[in-house]
Figure 1 (cartoon, rainbow, N blue to C red):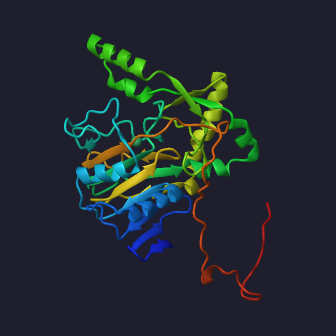
Figure 2 (cartoon, rainbow, N blue to C red):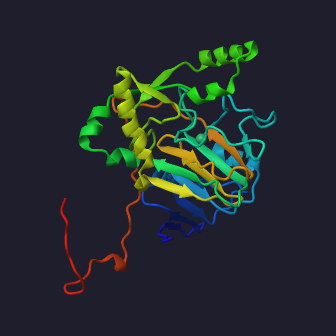
Figure 3 (cartoon, rainbow, N blue to C red):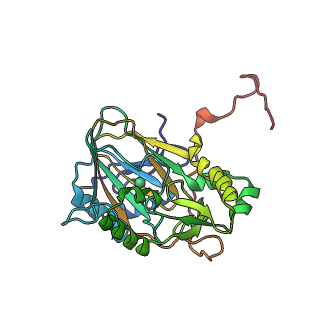
Length: 324
Ligand SMILES: [Fe+2]
């Protein structure tokens, strides 16, 4: 793998190493078992906005450290359905094995987007990793938006996606008690809309903000119309150029920007055991192009070319341009 160091702060030695063209960077030389200094956090936060996914390897830390790290970004949120620990309700333990197959996560999604204000970020930490498989895929939907033609960008610019907690409905059975619980959750989480093109509240970047797990239609469109358009938009996450694939090793922690990134947990490790701990950071209500954004624009880092990238000099080799 080729690596390009894009920042190196001498004062604390943190390195930010990009992992793919459009998203993903590894943060090196930062021990998360200690409270971060203001400077350290500001480097991490800037790298997070630029790269959308950050990977921290060899972090021998516990849930308390993970929670403390999350709180640097903002208030933590509690999942409305997931069972959680009494003393740490912000923590979700994802422990999958032979008797507990993974469910619902092998689909492109952004966490909890059926909520009025979905989480801004998710932090996942591996405690037991399978010997084979179990990678997580990420797709930058801001890169995907930038890759659309002007015509499609224009077409989707004012649209609203319709969201529902659809896949979680399968967790409720037909008995009276379960039906009652489902009705209560339906009251708390009614079907709602979010802009199809979301403007990132901190970077100003635009992204495609629909996902096949929770988006069930487009407001004002006929079923076939929204199905066709949503398929086109969902398919953008499948474009390899917009993706970053992470192979987990034990004690790795990842934070991703839930506002502009979709993820997909590959279930190919089953029936091996894979145990993760997750916390989410509360986010704000998504807004689209119609709202005024007066913050800064933070783009993705440019690729820095080196000597070896220089085009061949005259006579060094064939030069032929195939214009499209
Ligand atoms: Fe997820």
